[in-house]
Amino acid sequence: QVQLVESGGGLVRPGGSLRLSCAASGTSFSINDMGWHRQAPGKQRELVARLTSGGSTSYLDSVKGRFTIFRDNTKNAWYLQMNSLKPEDTAVYYCEADWKRPVPEVGRSWGQGTQVTVSA
Image (cartoon, rainbow, N blue to C red; front, side, top):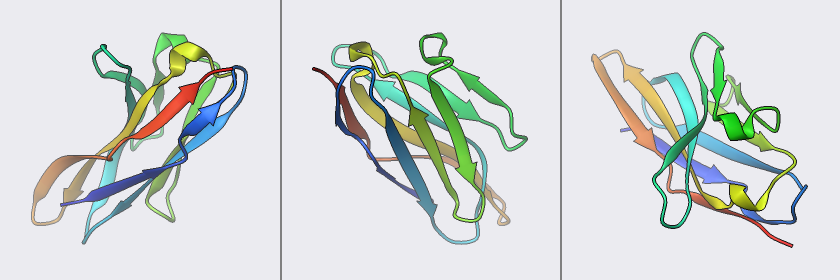
């Protein structure tokens, strides 16, 4: 199994910024596609941003121009830079990744979630 550990959530005022981090660990794996999802109270989990192994990105319409997903290939880590945050961005944010091993084996892992609260 590949484990994902997130960090970087917290409380921020409207208009502020946060950067979420996700680090993957395990044995003999490589990451294909990766992403960030969020779930607000009483709502379904939604995909916020996705980055493919080829470098293509896609974003939820409501975060386009404000959020950026990017990776650090040397660390098996990726990030979500969130700018111009709004109260409606308040949610628990989860990172996820599709990975493979030479066994062969493929799978998807999820982080534990990190709370982001945008409030004055």
